[in-house]
Length: 420
Ligand code: AMP
Ligand code: MG
Image (cartoon, rainbow, N blue to C red; front, side, top):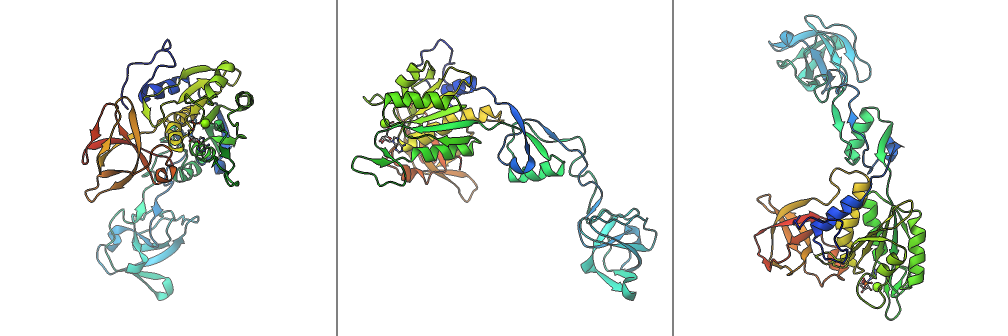
Protein backbone atom coordinates (compact mmCIF):
# COMPACT_ATOMS: atom_id res chain seq x y z
CA UNK A 1 0.00 0.00 0.00
CA UNK A 2 1.40 3.45 -0.91
CA UNK A 3 3.02 5.07 2.11
CA UNK A 4 2.10 8.57 3.12
CA UNK A 5 3.46 10.72 5.92
CA UNK A 6 2.56 9.23 9.31
CA UNK A 7 -0.88 10.15 10.52
CA UNK A 8 -1.07 11.79 13.92
CA UNK A 9 -3.78 12.78 16.34
CA UNK A 10 -3.37 16.49 15.75
CA UNK A 11 -4.15 16.20 12.05
CA UNK A 12 -7.25 17.99 10.88
CA UNK A 13 -9.94 15.49 9.89
CA UNK A 14 -10.77 17.52 6.80
CA UNK A 15 -7.27 17.05 5.42
CA UNK A 16 -7.06 14.66 2.51
CA UNK A 17 -5.12 11.55 3.52
CA UNK A 18 -3.79 8.61 1.52
CA UNK A 19 -5.50 5.24 1.41
CA UNK A 20 -2.66 3.72 3.43
CA UNK A 21 -3.00 6.42 6.08
CA UNK A 22 -6.75 5.94 6.20
CA UNK A 23 -6.34 2.19 6.69
CA UNK A 24 -3.87 2.89 9.51
CA UNK A 25 -6.32 5.25 11.19
CA UNK A 26 -9.04 2.61 10.95
CA UNK A 27 -6.76 0.01 12.55
CA UNK A 28 -5.73 2.41 15.32
CA UNK A 29 -9.33 3.27 16.17
CA UNK A 30 -10.78 -0.22 16.08
CA UNK A 31 -11.08 -2.16 19.33
CA UNK A 32 -11.17 -5.96 19.44
CA UNK A 33 -14.38 -7.70 20.34
CA UNK A 34 -14.42 -10.28 23.14
CA UNK A 35 -14.17 -14.00 22.53
CA UNK A 36 -17.12 -16.35 22.90
CA UNK A 37 -17.56 -20.09 22.76
CA UNK A 38 -19.67 -21.60 19.96
CA UNK A 39 -20.60 -25.14 19.03
CA UNK A 40 -18.36 -26.56 16.31
CA UNK A 41 -21.27 -26.76 13.86
CA UNK A 42 -21.71 -22.98 14.19
CA UNK A 43 -18.03 -22.10 13.84
CA UNK A 44 -17.86 -21.83 10.04
CA UNK A 45 -16.56 -18.41 8.96
CA UNK A 46 -15.69 -17.33 12.49
CA UNK A 47 -12.26 -16.06 13.49
CA UNK A 48 -10.45 -18.23 16.06
CA UNK A 49 -9.72 -16.48 19.36
CA UNK A 50 -7.17 -19.09 20.49
CA UNK A 51 -4.55 -21.34 18.97
CA UNK A 52 -5.68 -24.93 18.52
CA UNK A 53 -3.37 -27.82 19.43
CA UNK A 54 -3.51 -31.49 18.45
CA UNK A 55 -4.72 -33.57 21.40
CA UNK A 56 -3.58 -36.83 19.80
CA UNK A 57 -1.22 -38.16 17.15
CA UNK A 58 -2.56 -38.40 13.62
CA UNK A 59 -2.92 -41.02 12.48
CA UNK A 60 -3.43 -42.33 16.02
CA UNK A 61 -2.06 -45.77 14.97
CA UNK A 62 -0.25 -47.24 11.95
CA UNK A 63 -3.20 -47.06 9.55
CA UNK A 64 -3.74 -49.29 6.50
CA UNK A 65 -4.16 -47.34 3.25
CA UNK A 66 -5.46 -50.25 1.15
CA UNK A 67 -7.68 -53.27 1.40
CA UNK A 68 -5.44 -56.35 1.29
CA UNK A 69 -3.15 -58.31 3.59
CA UNK A 70 -0.86 -57.16 6.37
CA UNK A 71 2.40 -59.08 5.98
CA UNK A 72 6.01 -59.29 7.15
CA UNK A 73 7.96 -58.05 4.15
CA UNK A 74 10.72 -60.62 4.73
CA UNK A 75 8.15 -63.39 4.13
CA UNK A 76 7.31 -62.12 0.67
CA UNK A 77 10.70 -61.33 -0.82
CA UNK A 78 10.36 -64.33 -3.11
CA UNK A 79 7.06 -64.40 -4.98
CA UNK A 80 4.60 -65.89 -5.31
CA UNK A 81 4.63 -66.46 -1.54
CA UNK A 82 2.04 -68.46 0.37
CA UNK A 83 1.05 -67.22 3.84
CA UNK A 84 -1.36 -68.56 6.45
CA UNK A 85 -4.27 -66.13 7.09
CA UNK A 86 -4.54 -65.87 10.88
CA UNK A 87 -7.06 -63.10 11.32
CA UNK A 88 -8.79 -59.98 10.08
CA UNK A 89 -8.32 -56.27 10.89
CA UNK A 90 -11.10 -53.86 9.95
CA UNK A 91 -11.52 -50.11 10.53
CA UNK A 92 -12.62 -49.70 14.14
CA UNK A 93 -11.85 -53.37 14.93
CA UNK A 94 -8.13 -54.18 14.91
CA UNK A 95 -6.49 -57.60 15.25
CA UNK A 96 -4.75 -57.89 18.57
CA UNK A 97 -2.30 -60.75 17.96
CA UNK A 98 1.25 -60.68 16.61
CA UNK A 99 1.89 -61.83 13.05
CA UNK A 100 4.54 -64.56 13.08
CA UNK A 101 6.75 -65.86 10.30
CA UNK A 102 4.70 -67.18 7.39
CA UNK A 103 1.47 -65.49 8.52
CA UNK A 104 -0.75 -62.73 7.16
CA UNK A 105 -3.83 -60.85 8.37
CA UNK A 106 -6.61 -59.72 6.06
CA UNK A 107 -6.85 -55.96 6.45
CA UNK A 108 -9.20 -53.13 5.35
CA UNK A 109 -8.49 -49.47 4.68
CA UNK A 110 -8.44 -47.50 7.94
CA UNK A 111 -7.62 -50.51 10.14
CA UNK A 112 -4.61 -50.53 12.48
CA UNK A 113 -1.63 -52.50 11.17
CA UNK A 114 -1.22 -55.58 13.41
CA UNK A 115 1.95 -56.02 15.44
CA UNK A 116 4.63 -57.93 13.56
CA UNK A 117 3.55 -56.67 10.13
CA UNK A 118 5.58 -54.03 8.32
CA UNK A 119 3.57 -53.63 5.13
CA UNK A 120 0.27 -54.15 3.35
CA UNK A 121 -0.19 -55.83 0.01
CA UNK A 122 -3.19 -54.73 -1.99
CA UNK A 123 -5.91 -57.30 -2.48
CA UNK A 124 -5.69 -57.10 -6.29
CA UNK A 125 -2.20 -58.63 -6.16
CA UNK A 126 -3.20 -61.54 -3.95
CA UNK A 127 -5.18 -64.72 -4.40
CA UNK A 128 -7.17 -66.60 -1.74
CA UNK A 129 -6.55 -70.33 -1.52
CA UNK A 130 -8.01 -73.15 0.62
CA UNK A 131 -11.24 -71.27 1.38
CA UNK A 132 -9.38 -68.21 2.57
CA UNK A 133 -7.09 -70.05 4.98
CA UNK A 134 -4.08 -69.26 2.80
CA UNK A 135 -3.20 -66.25 0.68
CA UNK A 136 -0.83 -66.20 -2.27
CA UNK A 137 0.98 -62.86 -2.61
CA UNK A 138 2.08 -62.07 -6.14
CA UNK A 139 4.45 -59.18 -5.52
CA UNK A 140 7.35 -58.51 -3.15
CA UNK A 141 5.93 -56.18 -0.48
CA UNK A 142 8.22 -53.30 0.47
CA UNK A 143 8.65 -52.53 4.17
CA UNK A 144 6.42 -49.54 5.04
CA UNK A 145 4.19 -50.13 2.04
CA UNK A 146 0.54 -48.95 2.09
CA UNK A 147 0.23 -47.82 5.63
CA UNK A 148 0.55 -44.36 7.22
CA UNK A 149 2.75 -44.50 10.33
CA UNK A 150 1.35 -43.23 13.62
CA UNK A 151 2.00 -39.52 14.17
CA UNK A 152 3.37 -38.98 10.67
CA UNK A 153 0.76 -36.29 9.89
CA UNK A 154 0.77 -34.50 13.24
CA UNK A 155 2.05 -35.18 16.76
CA UNK A 156 0.02 -34.59 19.91
CA UNK A 157 0.80 -31.12 21.27
CA UNK A 158 1.62 -29.50 17.93
CA UNK A 159 -0.21 -26.30 16.97
CA UNK A 160 -2.61 -26.99 14.10
CA UNK A 161 -4.48 -23.64 13.82
CA UNK A 162 -3.60 -20.13 14.93
CA UNK A 163 -5.66 -17.48 16.67
CA UNK A 164 -6.79 -15.02 14.01
CA UNK A 165 -7.32 -17.65 11.33
CA UNK A 166 -10.82 -18.01 9.95
CA UNK A 167 -12.65 -21.32 10.24
CA UNK A 168 -13.03 -22.72 6.72
CA UNK A 169 -14.77 -25.90 5.61
CA UNK A 170 -11.42 -27.74 5.61
CA UNK A 171 -10.56 -26.39 9.07
CA UNK A 172 -13.85 -27.73 10.42
CA UNK A 173 -12.32 -31.21 9.94
CA UNK A 174 -9.21 -30.17 11.86
CA UNK A 175 -11.26 -28.83 14.77
CA UNK A 176 -13.45 -31.94 14.78
CA UNK A 177 -10.49 -34.32 14.71
CA UNK A 178 -8.94 -32.77 17.79
CA UNK A 179 -12.12 -32.82 19.81
CA UNK A 180 -13.07 -29.13 19.68
CA UNK A 181 -16.80 -29.59 20.29
CA UNK A 182 -16.83 -25.95 21.44
CA UNK A 183 -14.65 -23.42 19.67
CA UNK A 184 -13.39 -20.12 21.07
CA UNK A 185 -14.03 -17.42 18.45
CA UNK A 186 -14.39 -13.66 18.40
CA UNK A 187 -17.88 -12.30 18.72
CA UNK A 188 -19.36 -11.25 15.38
CA UNK A 189 -19.48 -7.47 14.91
CA UNK A 190 -23.02 -6.09 14.82
CA UNK A 191 -23.41 -3.87 11.81
CA UNK A 192 -26.27 -1.58 10.87
CA UNK A 193 -26.60 -0.43 7.29
CA UNK A 194 -28.44 2.79 6.58
CA UNK A 195 -29.09 4.16 3.09
CA UNK A 196 -29.74 7.86 2.63
CA UNK A 197 -31.25 9.56 -0.40
CA UNK A 198 -34.70 10.90 -1.19
CA UNK A 199 -34.47 9.19 -4.58
CA UNK A 200 -34.44 5.67 -3.15
CA UNK A 201 -37.29 3.18 -3.33
CA UNK A 202 -37.32 -0.37 -1.94
CA UNK A 203 -36.36 -3.22 -4.24
CA UNK A 204 -39.89 -4.54 -4.72
CA UNK A 205 -41.17 -1.18 -5.94
CA UNK A 206 -40.92 0.16 -9.47
CA UNK A 207 -39.07 3.48 -9.30
CA UNK A 208 -41.10 6.51 -10.32
CA UNK A 209 -39.72 9.43 -12.25
CA UNK A 210 -36.47 10.68 -10.61
CA UNK A 211 -36.24 7.60 -8.42
CA UNK A 212 -33.94 4.57 -8.26
CA UNK A 213 -34.00 1.33 -6.37
CA UNK A 214 -31.76 1.08 -3.34
CA UNK A 215 -28.96 -1.32 -4.20
CA UNK A 216 -26.30 -0.22 -1.71
CA UNK A 217 -28.07 -1.65 1.35
CA UNK A 218 -27.89 -5.07 -0.23
CA UNK A 219 -24.31 -4.97 -1.46
CA UNK A 220 -23.13 -3.46 1.83
CA UNK A 221 -25.01 -6.02 3.91
CA UNK A 222 -23.58 -8.82 1.76
CA UNK A 223 -20.00 -7.55 2.02
CA UNK A 224 -20.43 -7.10 5.78
CA UNK A 225 -21.66 -10.68 6.10
CA UNK A 226 -18.67 -11.88 4.11
CA UNK A 227 -16.50 -10.05 6.63
CA UNK A 228 -18.15 -12.03 9.44
CA UNK A 229 -20.67 -9.46 10.66
CA UNK A 230 -24.26 -9.80 11.81
CA UNK A 231 -26.13 -7.28 9.76
CA UNK A 232 -29.31 -5.27 10.13
CA UNK A 233 -30.66 -3.07 7.33
CA UNK A 234 -32.37 0.03 8.69
CA UNK A 235 -35.29 1.88 7.07
CA UNK A 236 -34.19 4.57 4.59
CA UNK A 237 -33.40 7.93 6.10
CA UNK A 238 -34.27 9.92 2.96
CA UNK A 239 -32.34 13.17 3.07
CA UNK A 240 -34.02 14.27 6.27
CA UNK A 241 -31.44 15.55 8.78
CA UNK A 242 -33.70 15.00 11.79
CA UNK A 243 -34.61 11.44 10.82
CA UNK A 244 -31.01 10.69 9.94
CA UNK A 245 -29.82 11.86 13.34
CA UNK A 246 -32.45 9.82 15.13
CA UNK A 247 -31.71 6.66 13.17
CA UNK A 248 -27.96 7.00 13.72
CA UNK A 249 -28.42 7.53 17.47
CA UNK A 250 -30.76 4.55 17.79
CA UNK A 251 -28.59 2.24 15.71
CA UNK A 252 -25.49 3.25 17.69
CA UNK A 253 -26.99 1.83 20.85
CA UNK A 254 -27.03 -1.67 19.41
CA UNK A 255 -24.29 -1.67 16.75
CA UNK A 256 -20.53 -1.97 16.80
CA UNK A 257 -20.38 -0.45 13.33
CA UNK A 258 -22.78 1.75 11.42
CA UNK A 259 -22.39 1.93 7.64
CA UNK A 260 -24.12 4.81 5.91
CA UNK A 261 -24.41 5.20 2.18
CA UNK A 262 -24.76 8.56 0.48
CA UNK A 263 -24.99 12.10 1.73
CA UNK A 264 -21.28 12.69 2.32
CA UNK A 265 -20.56 15.00 -0.63
CA UNK A 266 -20.87 18.77 -0.82
CA UNK A 267 -24.46 18.91 -2.08
CA UNK A 268 -27.25 20.86 -0.39
CA UNK A 269 -28.87 17.62 0.77
CA UNK A 270 -25.80 15.84 2.06
CA UNK A 271 -26.50 15.67 5.77
CA UNK A 272 -24.45 12.76 7.03
CA UNK A 273 -21.57 14.81 8.41
CA UNK A 274 -23.82 17.40 10.03
CA UNK A 275 -25.80 14.60 11.68
CA UNK A 276 -22.57 13.11 13.02
CA UNK A 277 -21.43 16.48 14.30
CA UNK A 278 -24.79 17.05 15.99
CA UNK A 279 -24.34 13.72 17.78
CA UNK A 280 -20.85 14.73 18.98
CA UNK A 281 -19.14 12.12 16.88
CA UNK A 282 -15.38 12.27 16.66
CA UNK A 283 -14.53 12.48 12.97
CA UNK A 284 -11.18 10.89 12.13
CA UNK A 285 -11.14 11.53 8.41
CA UNK A 286 -13.53 12.66 5.73
CA UNK A 287 -11.44 12.94 2.59
CA UNK A 288 -9.29 10.17 1.18
CA UNK A 289 -7.04 10.49 -1.87
CA UNK A 290 -8.97 7.68 -3.51
CA UNK A 291 -10.77 7.28 -6.82
CA UNK A 292 -13.60 6.39 -6.57
CA UNK A 293 -14.47 7.25 -2.99
CA UNK A 294 -12.89 10.56 -2.04
CA UNK A 295 -15.57 11.80 0.40
CA UNK A 296 -15.33 8.80 2.73
CA UNK A 297 -16.07 9.57 6.37
CA UNK A 298 -14.77 7.61 9.34
CA UNK A 299 -16.01 8.59 12.78
CA UNK A 300 -16.81 7.28 16.24
CA UNK A 301 -19.93 8.04 18.22
CA UNK A 302 -19.80 8.77 21.94
CA UNK A 303 -21.51 6.34 24.28
CA UNK A 304 -20.92 2.97 25.78
CA UNK A 305 -20.50 1.08 22.54
CA UNK A 306 -18.16 3.60 20.92
CA UNK A 307 -19.81 2.73 17.63
CA UNK A 308 -17.63 3.24 14.59
CA UNK A 309 -19.30 4.98 11.66
CA UNK A 310 -18.39 4.71 8.00
CA UNK A 311 -20.11 7.31 5.84
CA UNK A 312 -19.57 6.07 2.31
CA UNK A 313 -20.22 7.96 -0.92
CA UNK A 314 -23.50 6.71 -2.44
CA UNK A 315 -22.37 5.72 -5.89
CA UNK A 316 -22.70 1.94 -5.91
CA UNK A 317 -19.12 1.32 -7.04
CA UNK A 318 -17.70 3.87 -4.58
CA UNK A 319 -19.68 2.17 -1.83
CA UNK A 320 -18.19 -1.23 -2.66
CA UNK A 321 -14.63 0.05 -2.97
CA UNK A 322 -14.68 2.14 0.20
CA UNK A 323 -16.48 -0.54 2.21
CA UNK A 324 -13.89 -3.15 1.33
CA UNK A 325 -10.90 -0.88 1.89
CA UNK A 326 -12.00 0.60 5.22
CA UNK A 327 -15.15 -0.85 6.83
CA UNK A 328 -14.16 -4.42 6.06
CA UNK A 329 -10.76 -3.78 7.59
CA UNK A 330 -12.42 -2.59 10.80
CA UNK A 331 -14.72 -5.62 10.91
CA UNK A 332 -11.78 -8.00 10.46
CA UNK A 333 -9.68 -6.11 13.02
CA UNK A 334 -12.55 -6.30 15.54
CA UNK A 335 -12.41 -10.06 15.15
CA UNK A 336 -8.61 -9.97 15.52
CA UNK A 337 -8.14 -11.56 12.13
CA UNK A 338 -4.49 -12.13 11.23
CA UNK A 339 -4.40 -9.73 8.28
CA UNK A 340 -7.47 -7.52 8.51
CA UNK A 341 -6.90 -5.39 5.39
CA UNK A 342 -7.28 -6.71 1.85
CA UNK A 343 -3.95 -8.18 0.84
CA UNK A 344 -2.17 -6.85 -2.19
CA UNK A 345 -0.82 -9.06 -4.94
CA UNK A 346 0.82 -8.24 -8.22
CA UNK A 347 -0.58 -8.95 -11.66
CA UNK A 348 0.41 -8.20 -15.24
CA UNK A 349 -1.77 -5.56 -16.81
CA UNK A 350 -3.66 -6.75 -19.90
CA UNK A 351 -4.30 -3.25 -21.20
CA UNK A 352 -3.18 0.27 -20.38
CA UNK A 353 -5.11 2.31 -17.79
CA UNK A 354 -5.00 5.94 -16.80
CA UNK A 355 -4.38 7.17 -13.29
CA UNK A 356 -5.38 10.38 -11.52
CA UNK A 357 -3.12 13.24 -10.51
CA UNK A 358 -3.85 13.44 -6.81
CA UNK A 359 -5.72 10.28 -5.95
CA UNK A 360 -4.88 6.60 -6.01
CA UNK A 361 -7.29 4.77 -8.28
CA UNK A 362 -8.86 1.43 -7.39
CA UNK A 363 -10.27 0.29 -10.72
CA UNK A 364 -12.44 -2.77 -11.34
CA UNK A 365 -10.58 -5.59 -13.05
CA UNK A 366 -11.01 -9.27 -13.80
CA UNK A 367 -8.16 -11.58 -12.81
CA UNK A 368 -7.11 -14.60 -14.82
CA UNK A 369 -4.00 -16.70 -15.32
CA UNK A 370 -2.11 -16.85 -18.63
CA UNK A 371 -0.39 -19.92 -20.17
CA UNK A 372 2.84 -19.11 -18.33
CA UNK A 373 0.94 -19.17 -15.04
CA UNK A 374 1.19 -15.41 -14.49
CA UNK A 375 -1.68 -13.54 -12.87
CA UNK A 376 -3.28 -11.19 -15.42
CA UNK A 377 -5.44 -8.19 -14.58
CA UNK A 378 -7.93 -7.17 -17.25
CA UNK A 379 -9.25 -3.68 -16.44
CA UNK A 380 -12.99 -3.60 -17.09
CA UNK A 381 -14.58 -1.16 -19.47
CA UNK A 382 -16.98 0.77 -17.28
CA UNK A 383 -18.92 3.96 -17.20
CA UNK A 384 -17.58 5.28 -13.87
CA UNK A 385 -18.47 4.96 -10.23
CA UNK A 386 -22.18 4.51 -10.84
CA UNK A 387 -21.74 1.60 -13.24
CA UNK A 388 -22.45 -1.28 -10.89
CA UNK A 389 -23.50 -3.62 -13.69
CA UNK A 390 -19.98 -3.50 -15.12
CA UNK A 391 -18.56 -3.65 -11.61
CA UNK A 392 -20.40 -6.92 -10.98
CA UNK A 393 -17.93 -8.61 -13.37
CA UNK A 394 -14.91 -7.42 -11.40
CA UNK A 395 -13.01 -9.91 -9.27
CA UNK A 396 -10.35 -7.45 -8.15
CA UNK A 397 -9.41 -3.81 -7.86
CA UNK A 398 -6.40 -2.61 -9.80
CA UNK A 399 -4.33 0.01 -7.99
CA UNK A 400 -2.98 2.96 -9.95
CA UNK A 401 -0.92 5.17 -7.60
CA UNK A 402 -1.69 8.88 -7.47
CA UNK A 403 0.36 10.84 -9.99
CA UNK A 404 0.85 7.94 -12.41
CA UNK A 405 -0.50 9.13 -15.78
CA UNK A 406 -0.67 5.77 -17.50
CA UNK A 407 0.07 2.22 -16.45
CA UNK A 408 1.11 0.49 -19.67
CA UNK A 409 -0.10 -2.89 -20.88
CA UNK A 410 2.38 -5.58 -19.78
CA UNK A 411 3.51 -3.69 -16.70
CA UNK A 412 3.22 -5.23 -13.25
CA UNK A 413 0.51 -3.65 -11.13
CA UNK A 414 -0.76 -4.09 -7.59
CA UNK A 415 -4.21 -5.60 -7.15
CA UNK A 416 -6.50 -6.59 -4.29
CA UNK A 417 -9.07 -9.33 -4.70
CA UNK A 418 -12.68 -8.41 -4.01
CA UNK A 419 -14.38 -10.62 -1.43
CA UNK A 420 -17.26 -12.75 -2.66
P1 AMP B 1 -24.73 10.65 -2.83
O1 AMP B 1 -23.45 10.09 -2.27
O2 AMP B 1 -25.83 10.69 -1.85
O3 AMP B 1 -24.48 12.01 -3.46
O4 AMP B 1 -25.16 9.71 -4.01
C1 AMP B 1 -24.34 9.54 -5.12
C2 AMP B 1 -25.06 8.73 -6.18
O5 AMP B 1 -25.31 7.43 -5.67
C3 AMP B 1 -26.40 9.29 -6.56
O6 AMP B 1 -26.57 9.15 -7.95
C4 AMP B 1 -27.37 8.44 -5.81
O7 AMP B 1 -28.63 8.36 -6.42
C5 AMP B 1 -26.68 7.09 -5.78
N1 AMP B 1 -27.09 6.34 -4.61
C6 AMP B 1 -27.13 6.81 -3.38
N2 AMP B 1 -27.58 5.88 -2.51
C7 AMP B 1 -27.85 4.78 -3.25
C8 AMP B 1 -28.34 3.50 -2.94
N3 AMP B 1 -28.66 3.14 -1.68
N4 AMP B 1 -28.49 2.60 -3.94
C9 AMP B 1 -28.15 2.94 -5.21
N5 AMP B 1 -27.68 4.16 -5.56
C10 AMP B 1 -27.53 5.08 -4.61
MG1 MG C 1 -27.72 11.42 -1.68
